[in-house]
Amino acid sequence: MAGQGSPAGQGKSRIRLGILVAVAAILLVALVVKKTSRMGTLVLDINEPNAEVWEDGNKMTTRDMHPAFDLPAGIHSLRVIKPGLQPLTQNVEVIAREQQIIKVILDVTSDEVQMPTSGNLFRQ
Image (cartoon, rainbow, N blue to C red; front, side):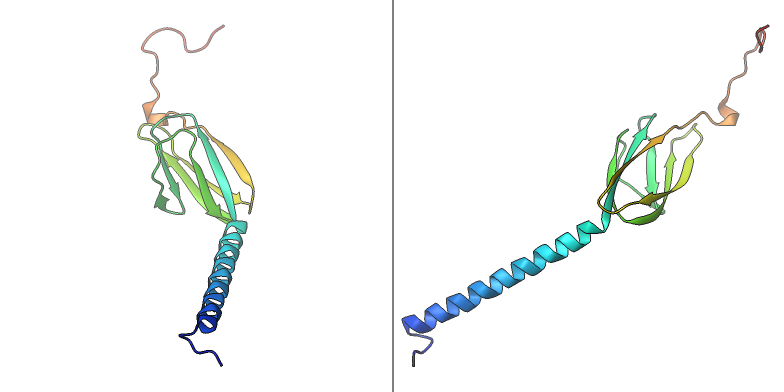
């Protein structure tokens, strides 16, 4: 019978180690695939630069006008804000393995609207 120190024993140990590494790699890939299969991508098309994006109460770290977020499938609360503009708050449904594009239009807030000081407001 070959012992651990013999060439045959060392070969069996390497085979066992190789099998363990292969099984661990397969499990890791399965976990990644399972997690990503429940994720979807939300892309925002924001009309204003430097707006803050909040998802489920968490500030996202982007100031891009076209940010993309990988989120778990399901309903998420989305809030986009920029000082001086009317914030947008909306619930969105993220669908697993799909990309959704949401157009975000931030408008001037009512207290920021400038009325003309002279002239007609309406054309005749």
